[in-house]
Length: 307
Image (cartoon, rainbow, N blue to C red; front, side):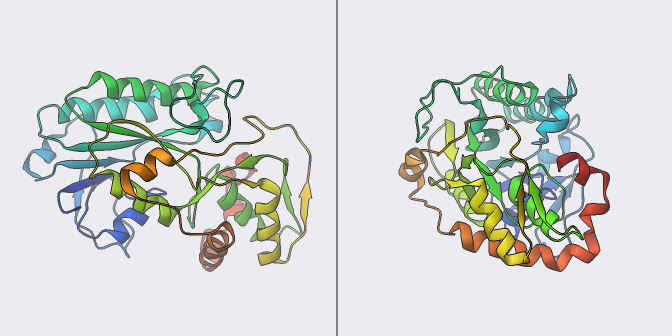
C-alpha cells in the first residue's frame, strides 16, 4: 500500500509518526531523520532542483513541507507564501511529468467562515480566506493544487492535531504540556471557554495513509468528529502534572465552538479516531516528560512567544 510512497517533511511534527508506522515509505528532504526512524531517506538540498526524484520509483506523495506558525506568518508579509505556497507549487510543477496517483498536502479548518458556519462543519460550507496571512496562504495553496490538474490532490483540512513533540509549536496541547513541565507553579492559559476538535497524531497518521488509496480529489476535513473545551484539556494536563490551572480570560480569535464533520473522510476510508482525549493527552504527557531535561522548552525564546 505504501511501498511506492514518498514523504516530504519527515523531521517535523506529523512526518516522523507516519514514517515510524510505515517503514516502507521513503523520506525525502534536506534534514536527516531522527535516529529511531529506519526508513530510507533521500537527501534533497532544495526544491528548486528535484532531479534527484527522477530515479525514484513512486506514485504517491505525502507533502508535509509548510508552516503552521500563524503567529509569525501573520506578522510577516511573505512568510505564508514562502512556506505554504511556493514549496507546493514547485513539487506540483515537477510531478506533472510523472504518473502520480495521489498527492496529499495540508490545509486548515480555519478557512471556514465563522460568521456562517454550522456545527458540525463539512467541506461544503462557506470559506473566508481573508481572515489573516496564515489562512490566506492555505487558501492559495488549495488554489495552486486546482491549477495543476494533472496531479490528483487531496487538501487535508486539519483541525487541532496533537501528540508528543520536541518542537516548540503554537499547538495548544503540546504548549500546555511544556508549560506543565516547566518550573512554573501553575499552568496559565488565555481562555478556557473555546471548544475545539482535537485529533491524536497516531490517528491522523492512519487517516492520511488511508486517503492515499482513494480516488477522491479535493478538500477533506480531518479531526476526531468530537469537540472538547480548552478548559477540559487544561484540567487533564493539570491532573497529570499536579499543577493548578489559571485562566486569564483573555479574548481569543476563531470560533468559540468548532466540530468537524468527518463523514466524507469516514465514507472514503472507513477510518475513525480511536484515541480518547484523556488517553491521547496522557500518552503525549508521558513521552514529553521523558524529554523535559533534554529540551528545556521554557528556556527557549520561542516558548515565550507562543505562551
